Image (cartoon, rainbow, N blue to C red; front, side):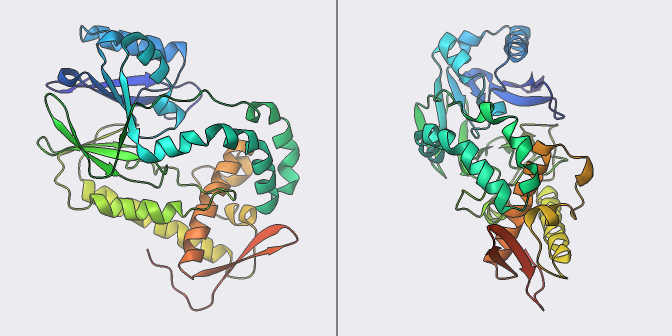
Length: 329
């Protein structure tokens, strides 16, 4: 789909995902693709077909800029690179993460098993064991040719893109800002309708919700006419969407504090009290794990602010609310 002269949106389909597709963006005159979509035969065909409609081929792509490392953004990197020799750009944090990827993959199943026990989901461990094999594989390394840093200006033939590092949804996530055209390529950082998945795992030392809220503030006041996200549809009103996202997380934090007001609860017990888009009782194992990881990100944020207390009893994490403390973002 043509956004404007020299800018195309490519919709790369995803199977078994309610979002349906990843939006990749091709800067035609600069031969630059922002994100690639998943690695499937259907995705390859969609890429080839949509390029063909614009009288282009995969071999015309000279540069790929990755907003972050999630599979629906990097899946076709190897395919495109094998045909065109395109250079791959990503934030320095992505390189750091990839450097330890193999070791982290080896430990993933054990880490997940320990985490489920810590979060109070011991009765779900038998479900994890059923899919153990899928977590014993090491993914192929992703080639990154050039690294980007916060504030860098990527000077292309027809435009310049400012790199804005926006950790939260992923520690390496970046947005790209075309100041001349007032266009923001927002990746998964800001989506028009849904809220990005902000999660934390017990084997990570991080505060992703705090990072995400700070990253939202980095975009405040930016002159933007059009926001081009990686999912759903283009939209306007950056300031309004920032406020909506902040209110969402404030509401979630207040829900969590309400859930622990009357006593200590595990992360799984707290998660069961949150108003998710689908009922907790109907969520399959994997979705419950994702929801619990979101809850843990909010709990860690509140703990770091001194609003709640965390303790481990018999190998399980429990959270309680501090009396007389009001939630604020």
